[in-house]
Length: 146
Length: 143
Image (tube, rainbow over the protein chains, first blue to last red):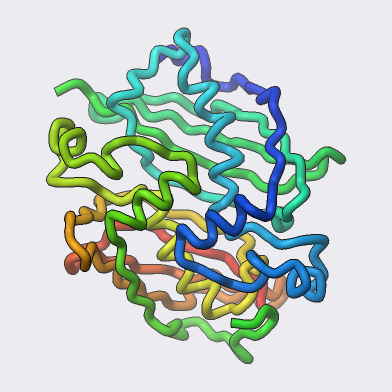
């Protein structure tokens, strides 16, 4: 991988529109039918503008922006050997249906350990007002060729 | 569970109610569609074994979501989860049968910040008796 990518930032051009149907699909796929995910009335009575997304739904928003960086040929990442090492979300506010979310991917670090290339990404997700919604920290490991 | 309910008092060392969930091939297909992660190692045995895996494996992000539910079920309000992070240390292998794989999750309160009204919950997720997530931690806002 090209270590010169460390410190660079990549705004993703296409904001993600959060919808109630996608939230329901995701909640059902993870087997959690909490009313805040599914029921607009319950969500509004709890003080939200619409149904809220489960804690790891943010990956859907982040993944597209990350992939745009990971597939840059100049980065030189061998995608076939990449595994997800770790993932952490810091939620500044809940993601709700109706949000239009922008992502900027920051390449925090690129290092080599035991022959593996290790890529640390931080994706900052904001709403249209520019307010912080979620910070997603991902470590991707490109395993050394056998 | 209704939003807004949760533990009345929280102290370091408190055990959360354990959670056991099954993961079947059908659920992997469903999660692939919902998450838009169509990597074939999560649904195609031929591809999975060709890259050296024992069989089809669950998406790490699905395992993360399933394990995190021990926290949201306990706190009652999923928007109380301020932080959630895991390391993916071992794959969850999902056989082509009706039973699928069983993920056993336990959790304990590791730290309480009385001033900030938050708690850190440390999660253990096991498949076949072995942990599959490392440093699995959530920080929740207390009611």
